[in-house]
Length: 96
Image (tube, rainbow, N blue to C red; front, top):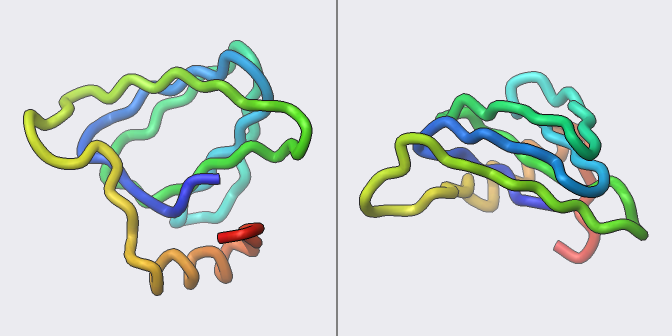
């Protein structure tokens, strides 16, 4: 599971193996994807993503458009905001 974060540009994501759940902070909706599915993260939107399976791996291919020459490609929210979003969206993280 990824912590809540954003990106400086649009991200094109394709699921190649397993299950993938993508959640925007603005609505806390679990968007479920499987092998062959694709999605677009428009960038500058706080979100998290996770593998809902305890037994199967998830593999995704992500392409960031407009990547900056310098700086982070993934920008996590601070710990306090991460915990607040987890509580708001009903997410329990095992082991941190």
